[in-house]
Length: 276
Image 1 (cartoon, helix red, strand yellow):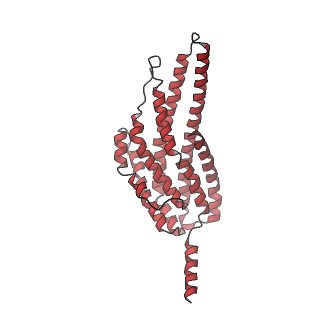
Image 2: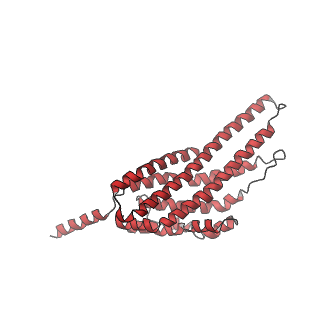
Image 3: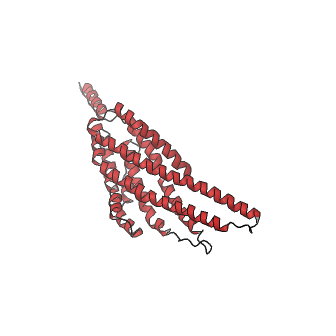
């Protein structure tokens, strides 16, 4: 009799847990995007430094403020890490220890404001929404991945996911885009000003080769940033769909609905990872 009771309890536990196959695939595809963020941020900082090397007397363009990256990048990386750790937790891919994740967000709003006095209140509000996701990560683990509880957590945190993805796309990634666009522009002006029929032919050929190569690499990076922003939009809308259907999850329907998003995320991740 006792054995039968144990079997019944185990059966109830198993049936109450989420069949998270598609959610796990969504989390895995998202994680590939999240893993590239720190490299993207670091490359944008290097792009800023490279751009300023083209500021000369012959090329008097406005120097870029590369200190922005030194002061702001740590907060951007922290916000990104929390978002993608939360998404990973939905697919049972994240650690249950949230101490390091949450600690990195201490005073994130103040740190962003100090690093960028011109940051808008709207951007600060969106960045601060990441703090709520730290609690959600712990709640997902505590839920034992029971479908009803996980669905409820997704529903409760959908607004925060929307705010954080907007922040990373509209504030962080757009700043990266602007910096690399400036680098491309500054180098193109430098190359144009340096071109002269009086230059030694070999030196001219080497300069032309460098300019073409660098321009192509920057185009690749700029396309990758667009792919990253598109991926954030997919993550937001996919999470929103999970939230909207939280009370009536149907794994067959989710499989059909999430399939295209997972494929698009995988494609975007490939574009981003090849560039950064």
